[in-house]
Amino acid sequence: MSQQAVANFVRQVENDAALRDKLSDLALDDMPGILKVAASAGYIFTADAYLAYWRTAARTRTTYTGSEMLSDAELSSVAGGQMASTQNLTCCMQGTKWRNFGY
Image (tube, rainbow, N blue to C red; front, top):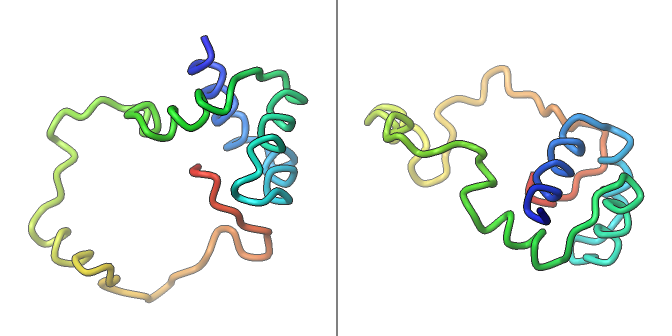
């Protein structure tokens, strides 16, 4: 049940700007703070369950079928961490506080 609570919390964070703002004020390693924000939103889970969620396939919420393979052209465009094109590149998080909580 704890893993499901984490998954539900992550989904709510993805769709709730106010909840994201609460999390963005926390340090990356402030697990008590993350758990407190989750509890205030009605999600109760342990730090271990939260960390395990991000270490498992549940993070992608999909099952690998083999069809997600990159083509050779796609792979060469991202190899080495370089972008193939920077035209029309904008940031969807512009003007917001950004913390990488894994979502």
